[in-house]
Amino acid sequence: MILEAQDLRHRYGAYVALDGVSLSIRENEFVSIIGPNGAGKSTLINVLTGALPPTEGRVRFKGRDIGGIGPVALARLGMARTFQLVQIFPDLTVLETLEAAVVSRLGRGLRLFASLRGDRAVRAEALEVAELFGLADRAGLPARVLPQGDKKLLDVASAFTLRPEIILLDEPTSGVSTADKHAVMEILVGAARRIGLRSIIQVEHDMDIVFGYSDRIIALHQGRVLADDTPAAIRADARVVDMVIGRGARMSGSPPC
Amino acid sequence: MLAAVGIAAVLMPLLAPLYYVTLMLPFMAYGVVLLGFNLLFGYTGLVSFGHALFIGIGAYTGAVLTTHLGIRQMEVILLVAALAAAVAAAPVGALCVRYVKIYFGMLTLAFGMVFYTFLLKFYRITGGDEGMRLLRPYLLGSEWAGFNKTAYLVGPYYYYSLAVLALATLVMWRIVASPFGLCLRTIRDNPVKAESLGIGVPRYRWYAFMISAVYAAVGGALLAPPTGNVDPTLAYWTHSGNVVFMVLLGGFASFWGPLLGAFVFIFLQDTVMSVFPYWQLVFGAVLAVLVIFAPGGLMGLFAPRPVPLASERG
Image 1 (cartoon, each protein chain N blue to C red):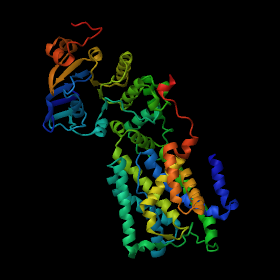
Image 2: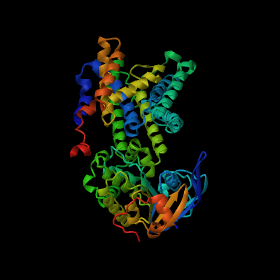
Image 3: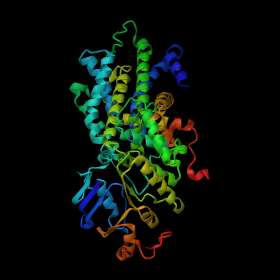
Image 4: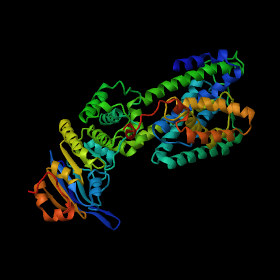
């Protein structure tokens, strides 16, 4: 058990966003969290990543309570996250972005007078990640000029550079064209294997992506866990199909079981 | 290019008219101030409207040491000015960096005004609005007794200032090219993303604030001796405004922009003042034109064309 949440509740004033959510993520699992708008997905992510302290309940990462510990401490513990809206450093090059992540991971950020250019270890690792994500030929370009798909990849790549044990991806393919979505996911999953990432949690709306990559799916509805099961079982669950996936949604390429 | 500028600066006292040589003195002092200011502005993304506070600390350090305490070694003055600024900047910065954008600017402005009022009202210590005299500092342990005031300023003091500016530039060059400098730029571009990469934003901002305060104080300490007098206007908010102006003029996006801005500001101010008493009027117009037509400042005009956007590449 790498990440565990027990009976999480979170209220914004009178509004209950999370109403007793329990879940656990094991090692080497790819888990997707799905749910309609307002189901509490964003709040759940923020609580699971220590960005928000839960009103009640506990989140444990490797046995340690991480409720509200904040992003910096979280990164240090070995959990990384990406955001729904792509987050980049517009004026930094691809290479600089990845170097910053390496510098942070190695704890070298407060070296005021050391030469970054002279730090071969940092440069080599940044290049390695750029290669892994197919960004090596654009390493010298400022992030702001990259096409949207590459920005998304850079965002994820920089999080991967922290070599986390677990990563939480908030809609990894949002804003990416349908044609590129699978390519993005393939790069991402391949890179995860290469860097030895143990588990991936994603929040995703695209059911093709959800059913195509997940070992397990957790469906949220009105702040509660509606179902927590394998993709096959989820697909067979009439309530989930009704309330979360929607009858109209077509799962192309994957006939119902 | 850089070598040419360096050689010109070294030869200037030998070749240029005396008057222009004396104008180089405030330029070099502000150069040091701006190097530090731009670490905060251009590299960390925080605009301080209260940097005159630290310039004032530096200048008054020289006055207090030379007139009250009889300490006249410039090296000691610079060191004490740097320490005093660091001590003042530690709590001020720790508070200010918790805020960003206009709130950060307003807080720094407020602290600057507090210090200005202190200088003005505690006249027993500071001489109030008349300020304090500052005796000629000894350079490298020598009084340079054989030099009259002008000869001292355009000779030993000029080269002393130039050496301090060169050293300050070198140190700053290293800082911005260090892993620390890179982390500051991540914070400038996107603090949320920086934190998610494990970069502790407040601490980095705090360090940048203190470094820039130390630079401002060293610059302030260099600024005062040529006039031989310090007064509270050194710490007034319009002085902070001038610092911001110089950086915008030169271009905050480039390492050398602020130095160019200081240079152009000093010489332009002198030229305009000699023909037109309301120089602020002209400078206001210049600022407006800059912001609208050349937000990258003078350096921005020389910069290579920006990389085309993805959408423009077709």
